[in-house]
Length: 294
Image 1 (cartoon, one colour):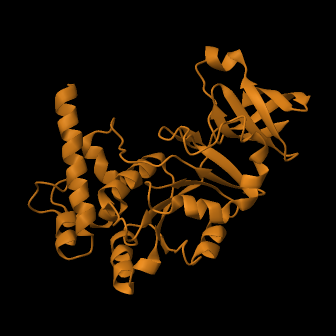
Image 2 (tube, one colour; image 1 turned 180 degrees about the horizontal axis):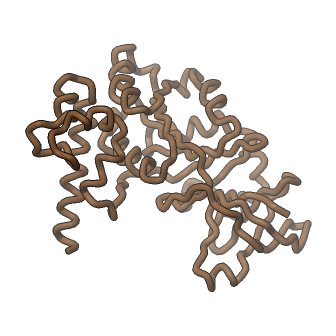
Image 3 (cartoon, one colour; image 1 turned 120 degrees about the vertical axis):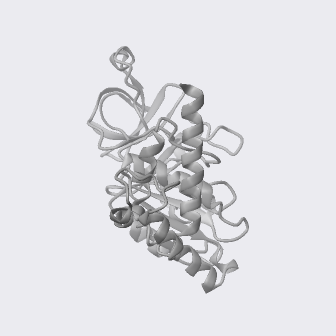
């Protein structure tokens, strides 16, 4: 039987199968011997050992189409990153770190700003102007007023989506509004996997509909791709590419060079200043790290 791993904890993997049953499975020793670790999101083949309670063994991990290191998950089609537009004010440095991480994995990102009941149109327009020219769709919602939730549901359809965001932005409220059916469905295993506010959070995959999954990932506070060469970083700021032909030097990193199409685009307001300043900060971080690790 085939299914999808929706949660993994303490050596047990919970596999959601086509019969809508969730099987508690152990992975065969062959995976350990080959140093392969099953991940949440993996499509797997299992042998059913018992139906009451539902238990099985994972026999095979099917080919992954994508894989993330942090959080360690597989087969993500897209990411929805949630920040509050106010209370707290969005940390754009943290948001840009997340976007770089997703770019390195080739996973498309949509940004959702919550709490628009606390914002005005000028505030929303500000964030549109920063991120839409960089190629990131921007949504606005209010879980408090139940606004924009239908748009989110449509966005999720037919995809496996990673839901991410720092704590305090209303991510849990959004999850509760779009996941009532999934929470009921996984209620039978809640005692086994010890879900609760005082336990360590793990990535967890919820089945919303046929071929529609939402992965609730732990809140993040700091992240970055640390094994990147500084000169690679520019590749993960998509808005730079159209202006690089105007750079005087091939391989321009858009920092110290005098004749630089990207720096000129920043001055002309074609590239967001906050995005460029974060690029400079990340570049320096990578450069410093290289200096101390060589």
